[in-house]
Length: 77
Image 1: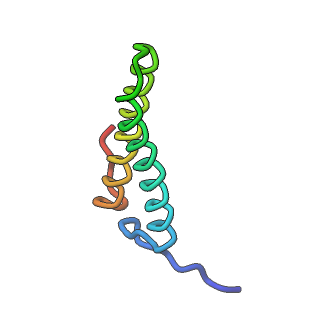
Image 2: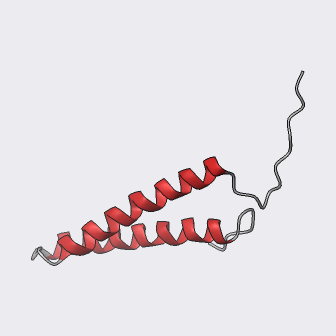
């Protein structure tokens, strides 16, 4: 039986970094699309929905960056 090796909590593995990179890219692309499209919309309700989406994507981007900058650390929410 193989013994499992412990990974330190403050380490980001290559697989973790790939996943975080994908998450960042998905949210960045969505953020850019919302920012570009909001200028073309005149409906106030749609603009408000775009603003909420922009805030959500920005929060997600900052969360991913905080994980990368402080692996294994506490994230202030």
